[in-house]
Each structure stands twice: as C-alpha cells, then as structure tokens.
Image 1: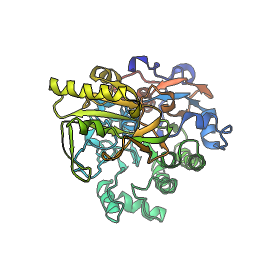
Image 2: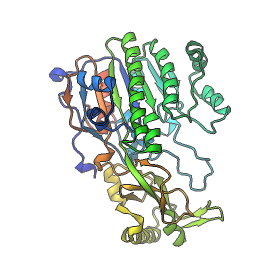
Image 3: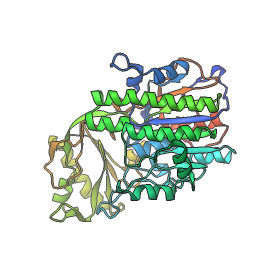
Image 4: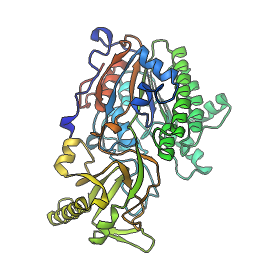
Length: 441
C-alpha cells in the first residue's frame, strides 16, 4: 500500500526552492477535508481566513495519511515524519481489551519512540509552546505546554491538567484571559474558542515553534456527519478561530510561517459492524454476562473504519492459522462488510501497527461497533467516521502553508503526510533525521 502512495513533498514550494528560516505556527484542524477549503463557496461556506492563507501561500489537493487514519497516530506522524510502526502510536486508545485502563488514550509523549519537532526545535535553540496537541503530556522540548488529557470531565480534571502542564502556566494564563482553561474532554467549537484565547496570550511570548490543536470540526462531523449543516457551521466558526491565531502570531512575529494541517478526512456512516462476534464464537474471546472481556487469545483493536487484530501469542503458528481462518470466513460473509484484510507483511509495508498480526478494513458507510454483545450489524452510533485505509481518497487531509518566501497560490498536488514534519524542521532550521521522506520545503 505504502509503495503506491504518491511521492511526498511540496517540490518547489518556496520561490527559488530555497528554505527560509522563520518561526512556525502549526495549527491542526481535526477532520478538515481539503475540499471543504478548496470548494468552500460551492459547499455553502465563507472561509476568508483559510482560503486567504491558501491564496497567499501554497496548499495541497490532499494529504495521504497513515494506517490507521486516526487522530493520535496521524498527529504523531505530523510531528515526527514517520509511520505508526516506527513512532509507536498505533491507535487513539491504548490496547486494553479487559478495560483495566478505564478508557485511557495515548496521552503520554514517553510512548513516542522517535524525536518530535518540539525536541528538534529545542535542540536548535528555539523556544516552543503547545496548546492541546495529542500525545503531548510531558513531551520533551516544550517550554510552555498545555497538554491534551482528560479522564472524567469532573472537577478533578483541571487539577490533573494543572499538575501536568508547565508549572505555573495555567494560573498565569487564566489571570491574563480572565477565564478558566477549557477541560480536555470538551471537544466542541466553544472549547476550541477558549483554548484559542489562551494561545493568543502565549503567542505574545513569541514562541519560535508553536502547535495548536482544535477538535470542533471533528466533533461535529462525528455527531452530524461530514457535509452536514452542523459540520459546516463548525468549519465556519473554526475559520474565525484560525484568523485569531494568525493575527496574534503575525503581530508578535511578522516573519512567522503558518502551517495549517488536518489529520484525516471523513466518511458518512450508518452501520455498526460487530467484529467481536466471530472471535467469541471461535473461543478466542471470552465474555462475561455484561459483555466484558475476561480472557482472550486474539481480539480486534478497534480503529473506526478499521481494526487491528492483536494476538496474545503472535509467534504461535497454530493461533495465527486459526485467526487467519476466522478472518477468511468473515471476509466471505457479506454481513461483515469487509473491504480488505491485511496480513503481517502488508501491514509492515504500510507502516501500520507493529503490534498487530492482521488488519481488517471495512467498506464505506460502516464503522467498528463497540458492543461485543450486539448483533452483527445495527444502526451506527455516529454519522461520520474515519480510520479507514489511507489509500481511500476520502481519508485525505489538509495542508496549507503561508509565510515569507512561500510561492503564492501554488498547488502542491497530493502529498505524503510523512513529508510535513521534515519540511517544518527545515523551515525552523532544525534537524529531524528520523523522518522517512525528504523535507518538502
């Protein structure tokens, strides 16, 4: 699969092809589809900031992401330039079949196996800051860090964040903003607006590399579906938030380069598919009366439109053969809506989860259901989903670059996501030697 991806890079992005060192503000708009910017007017949206950045700089027709096309694996690739198999963030939630971790996500940067742009910028002597970027708790190299984390959504969560953020930072910023910092569990556009207010204050300190993550578009697309009125309203509101960030950055650092990215595209869904059932029926998963896993030998690790298949003994040839048979029967049954099954060799070539022995990809319109006791199919919990194979054009994400020396109005074509981090590193004058592809600009 990876071999079929188009070559990365934003060749000749900069006028004359030469890099221009400058501060960088990296903004991620989770779930923003490239067509929602390129075809904004046609789709009934007025996006003066995003379309203006694209006109003043360069933009991609789409960014081909990683396997799976989920928020946390993608955002880690955006900061490292490598695939999940190398950086180690293979899903949003940690692998926890018996739910002992109580729904814990990959919040902690210690799980990232390669250097990030934060560390690279710091090593180059640059100041750094972060607001709400995934996998940022205790991330090396961040001077002012408001990491993304949540647990219960109760009053304990702000205490937890205060303990994990840069010491004293939240109190200082709350005094300047005059409002509390939004809880991490709040993924609404309103929560994003609160975080932007804090980012605006942080930009006054002129961080030479700053990351800001906004989740409201993704939240609306899951709830209402991509292209819905709710999703469009979230995109329009987020465009205004990006404008606030850009104005604050340019006021503090006139030579700043603004890079706007997203992590994946979106597909509408209407059906949940229970991938657990065949594993239960084969005796590979044991459930209690409430549907909780009590024992397992092989089990799906859900990822939206796909699922990694984890084996308790990956080197057990008999177990591998048994699971291969289960998957073959599933693929032959149209009820499971399976588009493709990847084996270990195909996973390795795609840079997917190193912990998985197989990968199941569902057809569009379906998502992996979370209830092992559910029927094989039932109406979906969400109206929009991602996590599908990165080869699906609907999963392509957004890239816009604007700043000193960037060729105006340039069409970058289709870009490999792994090319973004090394391009930013070179823009900063930093080094990211682990990146898997050449820097783009």
